[in-house]
Length: 239
Image (tube, rainbow, N blue to C red; front, side, top):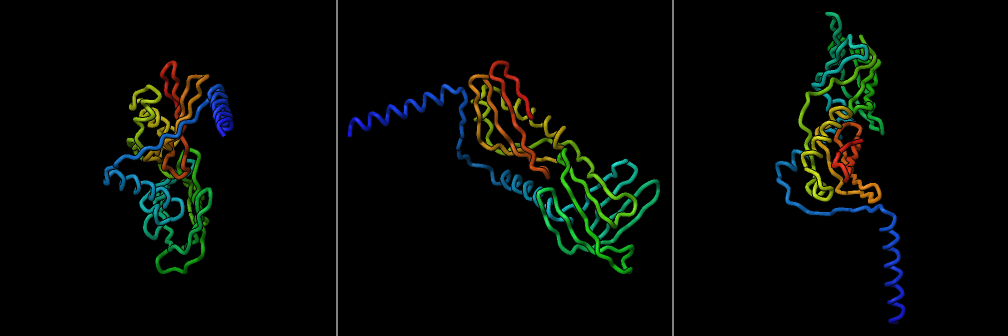
């Protein structure tokens, strides 16, 4: 029995040496922190808003859009699409029927009409996520342009969900550097994101002396931002 235990211990040590020798270690950092209830509610609200925008036209009320050629605008109001171009204004009244979400966005069946009293006809509104974290909307009842892109929001500070002090300490960099890098990434790639949620995992490449970790942005695409920290130069980059 003693010989068997020693053999198993030797095998375990050999396996560990192989893992270390590969020069790449994955660290999963699990920690529990007491989060302020107000901050938690704010983060959950932002996530709920992003999810809802994927599958409900009514969640886009009050948003403004611009045609691909920049010549027309669209405002989504409660019960009306308002299109404007060169002093011309066209209004399409709508009532929701049902919506169906999918991997790229959602389709919603509506009843559309040219006035409040005119006969309604069935129509379909399609909303898709775009590569930069925005949205495109198309409807066969639009009168000026078939497709519009949602206007970029005002530049706001990106909120970080998760205690990234652990990441900063492990990688030997300042926390502010990580936040600034994420802010720049979101500004150029996902301008509709409000929060970046850290997944709590750190990947270490010992051979290259680099550490990386991922964050999920709350834009319509659920964009993944990977932070890479160079242990030699201290440079922080995102991709």
